[in-house]
Image 1 (tube, one colour):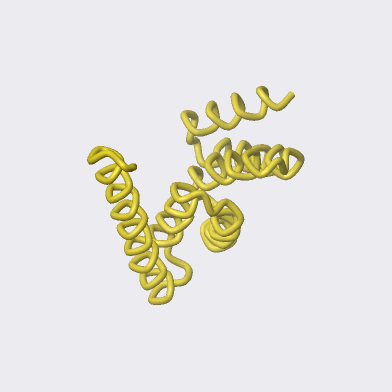
Image 2: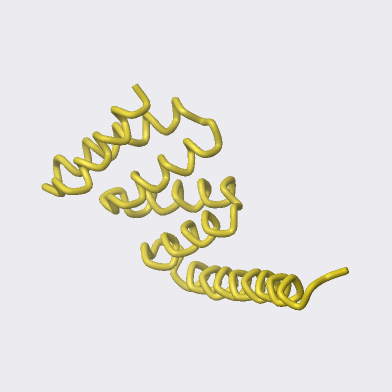
Length: 122
């Protein structure tokens, strides 16, 4: 028998999924309107990560970096997502690419994060 708190928790989970799906649809619409735009593409990738659709997130990070190669956060979060999928060699390669980009753009903070992530992978 469900307790009232279990019912509320179940409802909260349903609401959370519905809200995430709504955000994904909004972000997809933004990407359709501006396929090369970084804001919508990055947001869509991160929302896919948030709901656990890591394969879709990787696709979005790849598209983001294809059109916006200096969008440094894409390298870090894309690499993290690849790690979660067990695609370690690809994560290393993405971190290395991001280190090159952030070195050339002078983004020391993100470069440091990428170097740390790469070091943790060995």
